[in-house]
Image 1 (tube, rainbow, N blue to C red):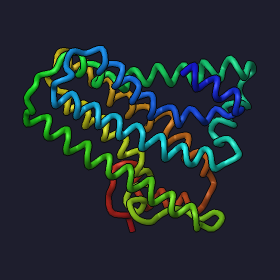
Image 2 (image 1 turned 30 degrees about the vertical axis):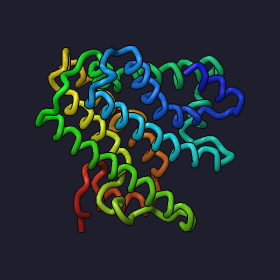
Image 3 (image 1 turned 30 degrees about the horizontal axis):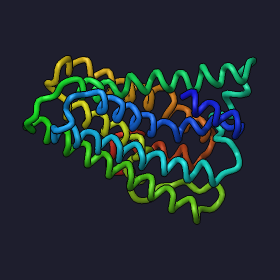
Length: 241
């Protein structure tokens, strides 16, 4: 996170932290894998692959958006306006806090690499199935939004594809991915502590920096207000009439 903070100072943009988010989990997973003694275990390699694929895809998606825009994300611009000591608070409020929450969210992964049984069980299959579903949901939602942005008219609201059934399919996919990770790592030593991970990401996205901050930008937008009345914020469901 210190590296990404320095990068942010050079680029004069704190929204590079969004790119760092996915890559941070990849770093945590590989660091724990290297220090573990389970390099011959299939479940260990599978978990490492899942985290790596998830983190790199997210970083590439957000990175393509970051480097194609000259202006900093509005959420981070609003933060700067409230700060008295910009450089110090950029480090503490953005990068240091993100690193802390990253460790909390990654709790089930870190516990998994501490010690894991070698045979796949029924709960592993349930967790893996949930992760595959969630990862696909998130990736498809991101792709649909990216395609929409290319042709959208000013003020137009995305309501097609998965966005017809939930206002935030990407956030739904991200949260459910971590619940999938948690279920996949059940019954390893101290597995119950791992619930900190999915609970943390659920709280952050639903109550702090995810949906609330994003939807605050659309306050007063009549089209979006109608969209909110018709479409669930999180769980996918058919639009209300």
